[in-house]
Length: 249
Image (cartoon, rainbow, N blue to C red; front, side, top):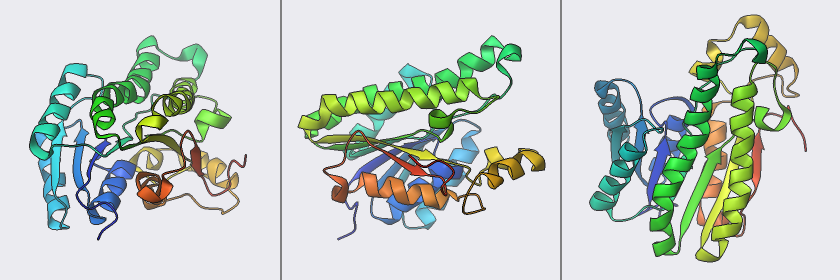
């Protein structure tokens, strides 16, 4: 029997990067995958077809995590189609970097809305079904900068730090219901987001990493898969740091 056979997993921001790697990892482990993302409808369709070509049962949704009504409808559709939700991975996030004194109000708010409010919206809608099942795995994707901070990312660091507090508090509330809540904090990972950085900025990051390289989305997916599995049943309120040694606590 596969690790996630007959389970349903939701991955926010699952069309590319870390989210896509997580979806592939859980899907190849037997999970039925539901994901959302923004962009064009054909991009969602293409990703669904890619998952299905890999033997993964999948459904994709063109849903903005900040739109509570759309999130609610997505969750209702998943329940109507598959009847349950076992795993939620709150992965969706964006950056709008800039020094705080120059940061536009809208850039501050947009990052908070996507990274933090989006996590709230999906968790709020999914949790009631997990409580009824008396089982669930919630994994929130934070970041190394949510722990150590980073100049030029006060908005992103704030949102990702808040996710850690959210994780620990919610874990205490729902542990007795058979639901675990944990976080994964990636470091410098090779994604579209980091590829856009200037080479000198990339070098500064790499120089801080004892392994002298960035990580891969699959490295994060492995940590998420463990926390999503039944093997992690006595672990809750914790953060797994996937950063090549950049930050050691």
